[in-house]
Every structure is written in structure tokens, then in C-alpha cells.
Length: 282
Image 1 (cartoon, helix red, strand yellow):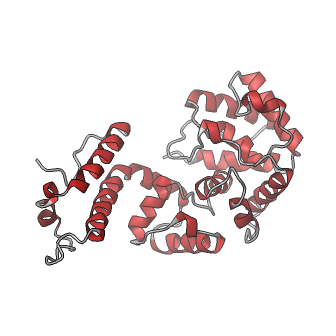
Image 2 (cartoon, one colour):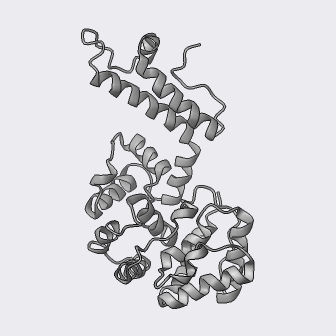
């Protein structure tokens, strides 16, 4: 496992933390011109009247190939004379969608919130007011926000992306509703993870990625059980136990299973799964 990226990202973040939005915007354009790698500004660059540091980081944490990511990071290393080596492996680092890689909502106030958040994360200061304010920004959401924090301070923040969230739900034996997670709840999750799973967040994200297929299978089984419970199947038979073999015998009788099976087939093809799902009938 290569953890070099977290040191490089943190060092880079400390170099740009005091940049104005115009400086960070110009740096983004400069990288595009020098590396020939398209930035996340596209055609709207003419209309941009503000920009933020997290959106800058999204340039090399979005769906582009590793070669282009390395080009950008090598340019930044030389420009700022960074001490850490340029990372060459990016497995399980959260990325953002190319079409949604801006974090500000076209308001200067949004940039002020994000830049102050950026500073506090690097200084390990409390985020009690800014975290919840950032969640209210139009282009922001819990997955995005926690991923940003993780990019620049992976020792103290954990991304709640689809891989990591499912993993910690499994390990903590809890289910989380993203809509209910505010800053206080996020801090509690971090505490529970450190106390009950691991205090190395980078290791956790790697574990989450490696176990994604198995977690998907277990999540599918959970959804099927909940669906059947909601529809009051087997009222007279107590099968809500760990006896999965018994439970499998009844799958073919329920139309609802077809929906979940088809859903998992799509996931399996997309992720190139090789193993059959646990509950599939032979």
C-alpha cells in the first residue's frame, strides 16, 4: 500500500492555503496550459467569478487517468519545490464526478466558507460551525465534504463515500442515514471507528475498497430481508436468524427477489465481479 499521496496532498495544501480565489483560479489555468490536461473549468471559465481550494484539488481527484494525474502533480511539485515524492498510486482515494467537480455554489460567500474550512482542517481546528454550513452549499453533500477533508488531512478525517460508509456500517454493526449526519454525528462516527475498528483512516479506506464485493453481497441480503419483513412474508415462521441456508430455499417464491437480483447483476458486471452471489440458486 502506497500512502505517499497523503503526505504530498497535505504539503501541497499548506502551500496554497493562503491563495486568493483569483490566484487559485489562475494556477488552475496555468496547469492546464503547461500540462495539456484539461481542467475542471471547461467552457464556463469565462463566467467564473470565484473559485476555491477544494475545487482546485478536484482537478487531480476526478475521473482522469493516472498518467494525467501524475502530470499535474509533477508540475506542482516543481513549481512549489515540494519535498514529498509525487504519488503514482491512487487506489481508493475518493474522486469526484467530472461534471460535478466544483464545490462552490456560484456565491462568494460559499468560497469564504470553503476557504476557512480548508484552513481549519489543515490546522486541526474545530469545524463545528463550518461543517454544517458547507453541507448547505448547493454543490456540496456529505460524501463530497468528507472526501475533501480526507484529501488534505487523511490522519484526522474519514471519507463517507459509498465504499467506506458501507464498510464501517458492517464493522460497527450500524446503519447510517446520510441525511441525519451533521458535524456532531460525524465526530461520533470518527470516535467509534478509532475505538472499534482502526485509527488509521487510510488503511480503512483500502480495506473498504478491497472488501467492496463481499460488502455488496451482504448488503443485498440485508435489503432482501428488510423487503420481505415489510411485506409480512412468513408471519408464522421465524426465519429471521442467521440460518441463511434455510432462508435461501424460499427465494424463488418471491417476485421481489427478481428486482434485487437484477440490480446486483448490474453491479456485478460494472465491477467485474467473478464470484456468484451468496444467495443465488444453483
